[in-house]
Length: 295
Image (cartoon, rainbow, N blue to C red):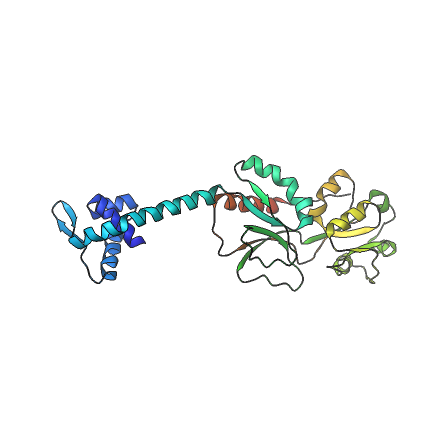
């Protein structure tokens, strides 16, 4: 393809120098491309040089007539494809709790910074294999013992830090971390070791004795807000609740769960302007997310 572009450019410019200027490359690059094409065609000479520049040989004229329309049609198709790719929305699939608690509240900021970047939310699948062609980006949690597929590029965003939360009324019962032994500890069925991690970070022995457990962090947050008990959740998921005072941290101890949320994209996915601006914005949002609330 490069060789044919160079050949047709020389045909139009009637010189290697003029073709190089059209293509924004060196004259040597154009000359080598035409030479490769001649070699590929079995050593056929396509141009004769004279004092005025170059002229097509008889075989060069034949080749020009054969490829000019197909190459122009291919260029037009590539241009149309590129424009369609650049103008289409960014299609994302977000794990529900992060989507509701962290991502969606920030979308208006994305619209203000990049008003021409449109977002389409696609269905989240717990058994995602990252082969769907209707999604450009996934925001997924790193699950225990899970290995990311080789065909996926991942980048950590946020969500490793766990904090305990409860209602302001319930907090009044606790003076020291060990007082939580008498509390109703709400658990996550997929991550049953969260409380053990937190008590270890707080320097308090922990005897597994969890209360109601839930399979979604969103449900844990709702249960904690209702006063059902104390939950330990990623700090990034309860920012608004802490700001509003609906939830408080009985203790400031944080612990890393070693998991967190990742931005995922297929390695073979084509890059496009809106997608690149979205991913840059998202990475910056997560890097700037140093929210801490003291109670």
